[in-house]
Amino acid sequence: MSIESNPPPRANGYLLLFRSTNWDNYGLTEEQTRQSVDKINAWFDSLSATGKMVSAQPLMDESVVISGKGGDFVTDGPFAEAKEAIGGYVLLSVETMEEAVAIAKTNPMHEFGLTTEVRPTASSCPHLHRVFARMAEAAA
Image (cartoon, rainbow, N blue to C red; front, side, top):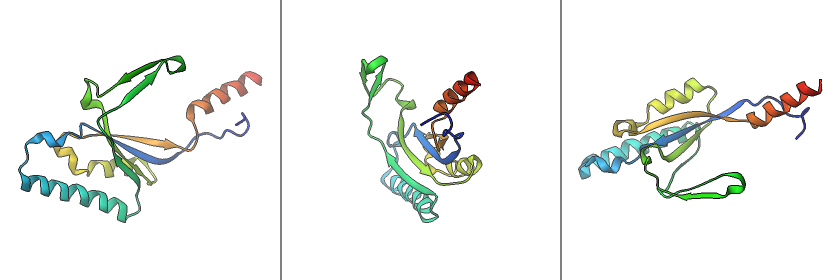
């Protein structure tokens, strides 16, 4: 990729990141669990039927974090701040952040402490675009 061929990134989708997904700790009865699962499945089915959901996946509790130059530091999870761990995601194909937020707000899991972060996905790397823009300015 060159300086000349690096257009500014644009949002091309929205990612819903789900945290605090341990609703199984709420002590629900079998009937309450069944009703909750039905509501959750209906929410996902609706997103799928309208073509707004590109993909979705729950995540396992285990994780590994790699950091440092050369990936020298490896830490196994789960971690103490598990309530902040991402438990799943939905990738949406919608036009605006407002529409993505409106959809996220309807997730029935919020009644069980779920938090949702909405992030735009990028058509290209915004960091790389900034680096190339600085290089172009310096060369001018």
